[in-house]
Image (cartoon, rainbow, N blue to C red; front, side, top):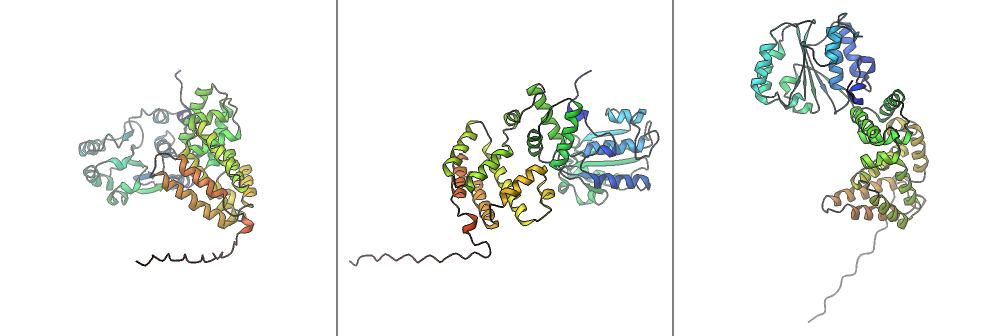
Length: 389
């Protein structure tokens, strides 16, 4: 049997397996159980969060031998064909390559025919926003009053590009980024089933690099297994992704607190020599100071807002005590100025060095007036008198 990548092997096959989209699952379950299923849905959200997988599960729920049902059996002919993407009744169309008016006209002609085996004929159109304006116009009438045996499910990462005339004829369901905590839980589950030893720092590095996309995280883990033959270490993640691990962010911030400017520049040089992506380093530093800010201004709810493992949140909370809120906010400006400077020069090392020197040269938190600090007015510069001729 040919190898199946993790993103496909661990694709959810029922509503209960969909991760991080409880609000969408609840809406669809209620629609099915109350027999109020709409004729057209738009699944909108970032890449890799389960839009197409949920569309397939919904199709199985409607066309299952026992359907419409909240729990498709995944064993009948209809469910098996949908899972294997070979069903004649569930047509998955790529909106990018079937975007013209002729393609939509062909679709309009096909919707007239009844389903071959199941109860419904279901069209899943991925990246629907890429259909041309003429194509959307041709779809309007069919979408407003489709035959009773036809259902439409549109998936898109850019709902703002869909015409309002189409949006008004569909029910919109917003998919969200999957939290790092939930991604880590799923990766642990995969690791246990695949007999992989995955440390917490490896899981965190993969989750943070995926930017809320569970599919990206699973693909990265799959790549790491091939790269390391199953023995995955943090250095392997860094080698594949160029990632800056959490420990380096703690070290950089600690050196800033200690005013160790030389140590900071030496550490930056070490990171550059080891092949770290400086753009990612700057973004991670900005994110880390954001985490410090959240910890400073929230008393008890910062763990949920940080979206990080509990032990990492506790370490950030300890370090946040050494900063005043003013210091954190000033540091944001320093890092954002470095980001702006990096757009004007090709070498990102120089803006980063300037930023680190500035951060390590700030007065200590105890030396700053935290509440309404007032700057002393600087004496005016004396005007230089030009010699009389």
